[in-house]
Length: 85
Length: 343
Image 1: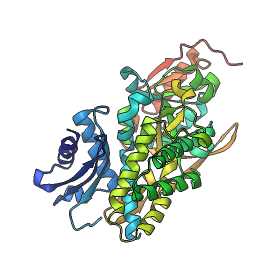
Image 2: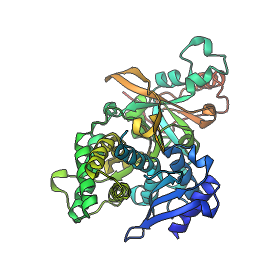
Image 3: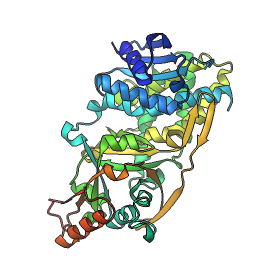
Image 4: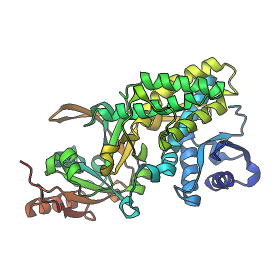
């Protein structure tokens, strides 16, 4: 549930289609979702700073699920435009 | 920036930016705020500071609509080393170090163990010299706040709309997590601290995601240590001793790693100067920064409550007049209901 929540929040935050999002999320044994989401071919995403992206993602996470209903750790948002790390 | 430094910096900035959300998930454990109290937060301060914030620094700005942004376009954040309770920083450090010790006791994988060692070292090294903090309370009329921060009851409490403030301000806006005192020499390694353990776990897990791709893990670890030394004072300030729980504190924290650096895919493309101001108090000279509130600065301030020793009709009248002159006619003026007369 939280896994899909994060992907939905990423899509909503950056106005993406499903094929623009590469899911590399994982989860701890306790079910806490965290990891990397790669975003492809988004000029909006590419021009934003790391902080701006993260802030926008969490704004949407909160809108979708509220503060206390999620079990989500750190989500690293990464541009698919040729970035290895 | 080396590739390792950039990779670490991006993880740490993502962690930092997401920190309010990470803390909010655990907040029912840490605090017990009623929903109704959360809409507004209150900054207790002295009347001279209120005047300096509301009234222009330059007299000719008084009637200039543009110039007013120069005055109440900001919230003042005090250097962490100069906050009223110097133990706050130490408490947060001990909470974090204890969580690291507990994580190390669980025999983590080698990559996590290496990063936990760097986190422990960074926690010991950092001093919070370049971290600034603005403190608010969910309580609008609280005797302890008046005594501690509101000029002994002679000051006032500025009421801001919390969510709008958090959105507008260039800093990390978080509710404080309250923890019992930690004896760092005798940490119960079998125990748990829901909030701190989770934060340490989140931080190390995120760093591990990138360490696995590092060509030079030693360089990655060194970069992690340096970056964490910059970050951790901010994390420490998210915690406070349980004895202060009734303050229901909300903080805006800023530093280079939190607010003053713009990090992109390719590195740092801008670093905003954190211009320091200084104010005189009974305790001496206090460095602070002004955190810009943006174009809607006036709209964020909703109420001003006069303290129990400053609630005279004349004061109320003067405050209303000041607010009107400075473009804050919409702000409600109220008075404390606490029967307290300072000696």
